[in-house]
Structures are given as C-alpha cells and as structure tokens.
Amino acid sequence: MFYHRTMQTVNGPIREPEPTPTPPHEALADALARLRGRWGSAAIRLGNGAQHDRDALLTHGALALAPFAAPDPTPTPVPIPHPADVTSTGFPDLDALLGPGGLPRQASAAIRGDTSSGKTTLALRCLAEAQQGGAIAAWLDLQASFDPIEAFARGVDPRWLLVVRSKDHEEGFTICGSLLSGRVVDLLVVDLPAELPPRREAILRRLSAHARRVGARLIVLEPQSISSSTHGALAEVTGLRLELEREGWIRLGRDVVGQRTRVTVAKNRFGPPGRHVVLGIHYLDDGERRMGTHRFAGP
Image 1 (cartoon, rainbow, N blue to C red):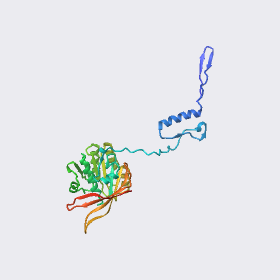
Image 2: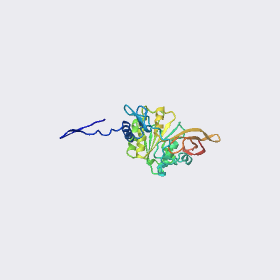
Image 3: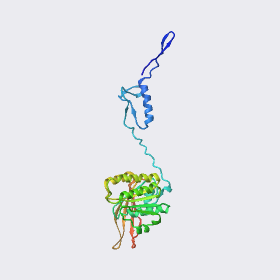
Image 4: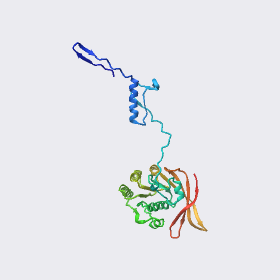
C-alpha cells in the first residue's frame, strides 16, 4: 500500500516525500520466508507461476500452499535399547533374531498363532524371564484358559503374578488399563479370544499407549482367526510381531513327545524382520512343556 501525509506550517502545508515503496515480489518473498519459518515442513509457493529474478514466482492473488516437501530419504535412526530395558524370551537363538537381545521395553509385542502353536508357552517363558529381572506381571485371561500348573512348570512365580478374570471383556480391559496407569505392573499379557466383540480396537490402542507412557511391556496373544480389523489395529500398535506355526511333530518311536514350531519375526522396529527360527516343544509326562531350539534358518 502506498500513502503520503501532510504537515501544516506557517508557510502552508508541506507534503512529506513518499517512502520508497517495497517491490511487490520482495514483500511477498519476505512473507514467504516467515511462513516457511513458522510452518516448518510445509512448502509455500507463490501462486501464478510467472518467473522473476532468481527463479522466484510472482502472484496476482493469494499465496497458495504447495504439496508437502518430499520426505528425507535418510531413514530416521531407531534408538538402541539399553540392556536393562530388554527381557529375554528364554531362547538365545530367538533373542538373537530380535536385534537387541530380547523384548524391548519400548515396543509392545504380538504373538500370533493357532491353538497349540506354542504362543502361550512362549509368553510364559517371557513372563518368567521378566520376573527374574524383578518385574511384577499381570495376565488378562479373557479365554479363561490360564493353567497355573503349566505356568509354574514354565518358571513363572505365582507370588508376583496377577491373573485377571473379569465378568466381561470391557471390565477386563478397564482393570488392566488401571493397572498400567497406576504403575502397578511392569508386564501385561493379554490373551485375546478368537471372537472379540466389535469396536474393541480402540481399547487395544489405549492399552498400548498406557504401556508406552509408563514404560511397561505389553504382550498380546493373538489367535489366527481374529477379525481383520483387530489384526490391523494390533499391526499398528505393536513394534514386534511374531508369527507361530506348528511345522510337525517330534516322535520317539511311535509316540508323539513334542512338536516343532516355526517362529517368524514378521515385524521388528529394532532389528531385521523376516527371519525365523524353529523351536522344539517337548511334552513331558506330567504335562510340562519344555522348549528349546530345534534348528535355525535365515531369511
């Protein structure tokens, strides 16, 4: 905008000289720089595409927002967890696949598999290892299938384990949310049923957010037949996903004494995904399951 003003003197009005106008393209360039500084990654350009000095763009109308700048091709480095923030799965070869040497505190984990795939056995071993490091754990038993005898045989100390059996799913999730928010437990295992009531994905997201906020570990046991929406929600909120599949039986003569379970690292924020290990789960006469490495295969 151009303007002038006058001053009254004894000799009559004197008109002040007009200030030197700022060229329109320079004013717009200054405004552009301020907008870029304020909005950061948002790219701002001038509107009509006409060229001027130094390839600046002029406009006869309002400033226009351009598409966001191209993302930096350099990947953002993932922080390496401190050894104290990692819990072993109980199986060195599986720990080696996970990068930091076990389950990191910063990432929730999902263990997916069918019935008798070994996911419960693996979760119990993780729980037992966490307890050896001083953790207090809770197990949300939505399927009412938790076996304390098997848990004790897998090394779990029942004195430092809270098993939650609620009247319905809503109450169970609410109790576990309170346990996490109150920093009562260091590890929460959620054993999901094959058929979860609809609209429970938001609750899983909140549990994961609670766990991250208080620095607790969350392990979700995911049935193979769970709904696609719940599976998608778990894929979003978990930093580690293990896919379990029974490959065959371990036999002694004609007797079946165990099974071979393939564990595939489907997602891993702290190491390379896609690798797998085959574990041998041995059945004992007293019902105990003994788990060990059967063989290793690369990606």
